[in-house]
Structure formats: C-alpha cells, structure tokens
Image (cartoon, rainbow, N blue to C red; front, side, top):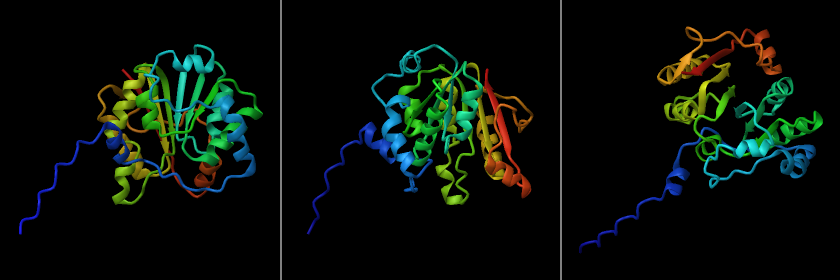
Length: 242
C-alpha cells in the first residue's frame, strides 16, 4: 500500500528563519538582587530604550533618545556595566549605548548610571545582532566596544562565537568612516580567531601589525588584575573603517 505523499512544507518566513539562527549567548537564570530587580523596574523607563524592529534604523533615532547630537559609542555585551559606566563618566561629550541580555548586568548598570546621574548612557536589553540590523542606521556609529565576549571554548560551540564574518560585516556597515571597533579577550585562541575574521573584512584596517597595545581609555577590570597576577594575558584588537 502506497503511503500518501506529504504536502510540501510552506516556505519559512523571515521571522521563522531569524528564530532558527544560532545565537552567541544563552540567557542564564542568574540570581538577581532585590536592588537589581528594582532598578530594572524603576530605572529602565528612564535610561532604557525598548527594542523596536519597526523604527527603520532612522538616522535621528538615537539623537532623539539622548536628546542631543554627539558621537555614538555602542558597547555590546557589557556584563555588569562597570567598564561601560566608567568610560562614559570620563567622556561626557559622547553618547554611549550599552546592549546586554542578562538581567543582573542590566540592573547593575542601571544602578551605576543613576548613582552617577549620567545623562549620556542608554541601555537596550536585547540581542545585539537584531538591534544593529533593525535599529542602527548605516554609517551612524563612531565606535564599537566588545570586551571579553564569551569565547565558547569547546570546538562544537565555536559556531556560537559572536565574532563571525557576517557579524563583522554588519559592524563595518554601521560604522562611520574613521570609526573604530575595539575588542579585548583573555582567551588567546579566540584572540587569534578574531584577528583572522577581522583581517578578512576589507573595509576595516588594523591599527597594529596584529594585536594592539591596551589603550588607556579601556579601564582594567578586577577580573583582569586577578588574571595578570596568575600570568594570564589579555589581547586587544583595534580596527578602523577606511
């Protein structure tokens, strides 16, 4: 007896395809303090920006959000926000947009912003790839900071690494001419990986022969200081858009 042939599957919509994409992060259920939860509830409306895939990457969108025109730095995956807020406090003439998915980090960053009454920082709690695609206009960003992204050590997890050729091309498309991408990692195999991927992007130029000296503008974290005492290295990469 013949088995009836299955009807052809309907083509997947762009939304379905996006849901199947491999993400560079996993939202872990880390414990949030009461103060972090309260910060998200009370401070996100003041310092946060809701993800919006309909804003059409309007050139003036972020200027409106900050209430001024200023150079824009975007930090992707800011962790607990300490470095982001320290840099922003040092450079009040620039606007800083931090993108993070982990609730404890978002809550902590909001607390730091509020404690220092900073007016030049905004937070988006969403996938950075989608934010760049849908909310950030081409050639509108002056700098990208990506510090200590998850290296996904195991070979089978390398596909989850943030720094892949399509993502680097997306970064480059959003950068202004003369803008830069600054990365740092404490995992040497990932540093080599990032170097190769960045070198392959023709619109970006390495500021050094391979790895760059640590810029004074990037604060040294407690994590770095502990690693340095144990002999661990940190590798910085600094690329500019031609």
